[in-house]
Image (cartoon, rainbow over all chains, first blue to last red; front, side):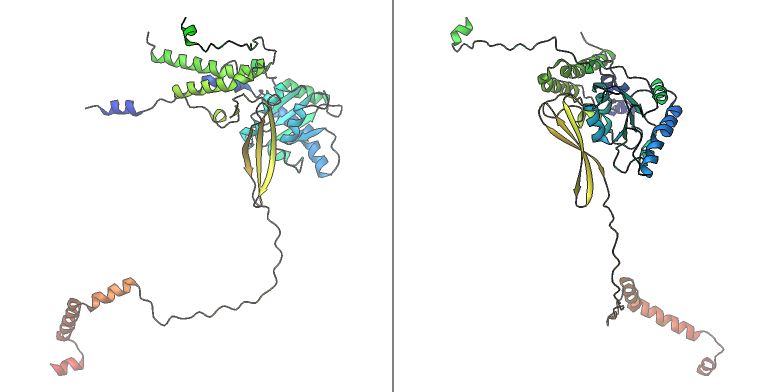
Length: 196
Length: 181
């Protein structure tokens, strides 16, 4: 007769951990989003110099002084084929209730994009303030082009406080050194020859 | 040579890691045609070691269901958010299109509630309360029926009679009782 402890040991299943698969140094999926140092300062800078001017322009029905793009489709289209080579800032509300599947490819797209993109994850609650900037659906994404209208001092401050993500080795596309060789081989139909 | 538990776990982790990394190498070196084979091998390894994969690896937002390539936006993936209205309800969905095999994959994002159209004021129509028809047969509940049955039983009738007799025998100050006695 087995003891209770023995039965418990047999029935308790060990929890399998998949963490090392995803956190391995090659794919490095745990560090896709950059780390923001001094988050309150960055949030305040964005609020006062980006969101408020955009919200003011929207409320007064004026043309915005900043070159801004809202929404998933618009941002993705810009990053895939940037019309100008100017650097851009991409503000993403990844801590708000934006679906994960919508934002899963954004850090990859930022690394693959041909233009210089500074990805800035925003603190919780920014999504609500973005609602004041536009009447269309923004999906928690705001892209601002760093052209002449964007304050260069603010751009320097933002870039200084956001760590640039190191480019992942699997996203550095290089020409294959392993070439697939296509060749042909004769198929002998005679089984006697095969045996020999 | 047999491995102890720790060694076996380390071997499993490194084995699965290697397969997972190989999947990521393929698009970069332009050998995406092997992706399906490598993904199948990865899933077999996961199944053999009874590992539980996170949601993005299973729901088809990481690998193509058809050709097995790792999705890289801007390289082999086209993403678009589309909004369709079904039965007055706005349904927003993210559509992934694999540029290798043209496979479409749809992810529902949010469901918006129906937009409330302003109600037009209805014309006043006087309505009198309808006369309720009173039922001729009075409804008796089961509880009442049971009570009645109990009272009509022989024993209860006898006990009632006995009580009456007892009360009659009792001395009282009424004139009737005095005359009877």
